[in-house]
Image (cartoon, rainbow, N blue to C red; front, top):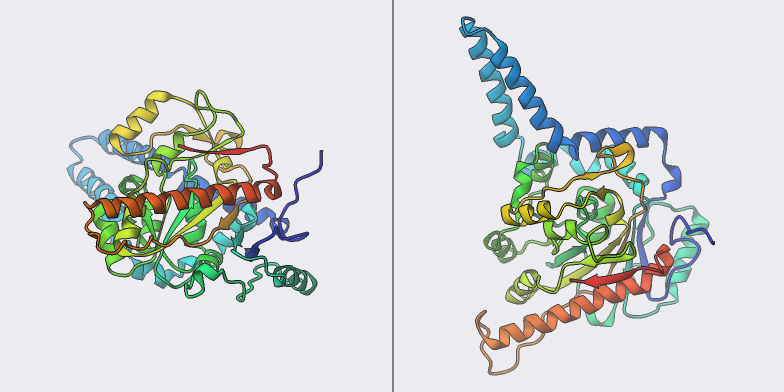
Length: 392
């Protein structure tokens, strides 16, 4: 059986493609592996170890004899101060994140080498300069990026993919949203997609450490009113439309196959409605490999409980049974921007009108068709030729 290449570039670029960013995984060092493991245990594992720490600290406080009133009061005040600072401290702001230069942290470079981060744009025309660009970068030894600014689809000639207002729909969500995270947190992600505000579930506020990291990126809460407000202010936003529910789809769920890649879209039209309302395009982005970084145990009642409480309760594991991800190359494929359909002359544009629903349905179908096209076009190059996409 032929071995899957470690990267799409080289040897060739699939037709109608434009390479944007590539971080080769071959340069991964032992230090990188250590940083990835340690940070994953700290950030992803925080959902477990932080509550355990507080439980241990509370037990210690309870063990102090009651006649040591000053010691109990001091210990209790210290514990409450730590908890309060972690939840509502002044460090949880966009300005503080910019001060720290969070996107420039070397930690993310280690992660990008770990996942062999790669971004490709699928364009409307097959420009021969694509292949020339790849060969020139190969000859010059360039590894980190390879951008051809001249490849532009006729349907988006005036649209600036990295600066104009848009909704970036990153699919799939995965057990942990690594795909959206690396597109948001890193300089390489910014180079490929531009800056955008991530739309995050309200439940992330309950996840220690992760909630602080996210707060530095000026996030948008996933509620309808907050997304509406952000778009009305001209923000570029990025989201995973499948959300928490998508964590529970695919194998090992009953009636699924290991070769199924699932995306919850059939009933998810909220982001399309927002696009139509604010007249902004949606950019479909499929991230190959993001569903394989963790494995999960199948418990149907946890899926039901998660949907009821609107918070993810999922038993997952990575290497050695720990919250350390399996090494998996992530390939982002960015499709053509999907613009809201034109308004039929003489029809109402209110959200309750049939015309508005028609435009939403038409745009939603275009988005789903484009996503499936991206998956089918690149799955062979990624080594997933046997896989199929299921839209749920």
